[in-house]
Length: 562
Image (cartoon, rainbow, N blue to C red; front, top):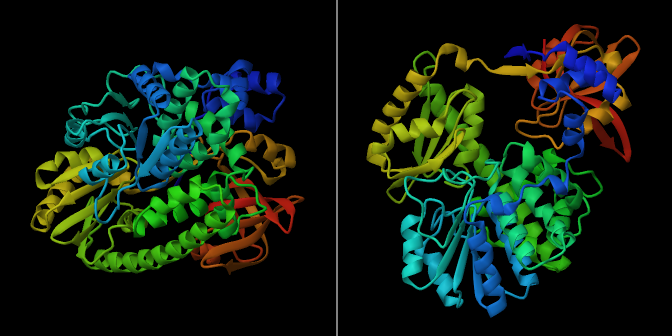
């Protein structure tokens, strides 16, 4: 892995920030490197809140959507919220179901079965809307490419509002309103909202139309934070505000379903951050969608019953364990194929396919394989005569664009730069594999296959303090485009006897001058041989808190070691 220290901003800007903010120079340097150049911009970065959210009516068609929903409330109509089976989709559905039910609107929801129906608006779901007597469907986290399905719904007398955040296709669906900041003609100033973020903007707009107090809708921000963080959207601009505010509500644990989920996952009593959402809470919600029907996740998020919430959370825990077992078995099978067939000198991308793989876990496994071999990876599960695939990429490769260039071999595809889904006939897999490897060879060079570790600043351990940690935490919430600052310290002494804890985590202590810190390197047991007591090493790490038995201490989370 190559360590790369970021190019630093003008030292005069850093001097200005040190003076006006009264912060250590390294903190000022990181702020400057993130585009902050004066006191006003720093205040906006650290203190942006509710009033800095964008006007929802800047989004194309928002006025039409809000007016139609206001009419539905006034006329006592029936609404169906149509979601997706991942965390973004289920939190989006829960958000609108809870909100519109609070307004007295008869509201149902529908989540397609991942294994039986696949992604997006379907005739089966539209049939359910008709069965429930709905006059209006609102899609969340899906629908932007559902041209035929929307036409079908309209032919059955249903109005449709599409609320989505994915890339549009060549033509927009003929819905009453199409809400998607990625529409080419949408003037909304921030394009990177999660699906639950777009749904919340719709909620905001309806609340405005209904002359509600903004305080009435802030409690829904816990769902916005949960869905946004889980969907790995960039935590900048409006996403950062929504997640910052939402994490405060999430930590209140006022929603029965979230409280039960936190309890069943062993996080009760701990401060929840974005890391706990991504690695602990989100996988459990995703598990029911991957292994079966995600309806249960929405039911958990909307219930007001602690008993029901705990029952569903326990089910999620069981499903997540089953998912992990299948995930591990599939990964081992995939890596066995890689060891036999993968040639790092000639294969710029990998396409793996097998009958019997579970389509619900291939996305996770594709991510693990891509990380292990650092090549764009497509995993295809062949079921009932059709291949369902998930693609994951590396930093410098737009896998969606490459897949689109091979579209003649596919039955369908969708996604974005780093992740995509596809369907392919088994007999076309070999041609698709050759075409994707060719597309990757054209777009990638040898340097692209070297993983890099971006370092924000080089410091000595004596610069780390409680004050520094408090300032670092103010940079949060952390996520894509706003990561926790990464530091490099050289010539650090390994103190005591390093050891492996858990599955393969490196645990050690380091000393420099009078400072001694605990270090944890998750999944970095392979580095144990470099960390003999008394060795001098260079560390790349982040500074964070470790809570143990009610006590908080500074801990260095290791990224790499030499």
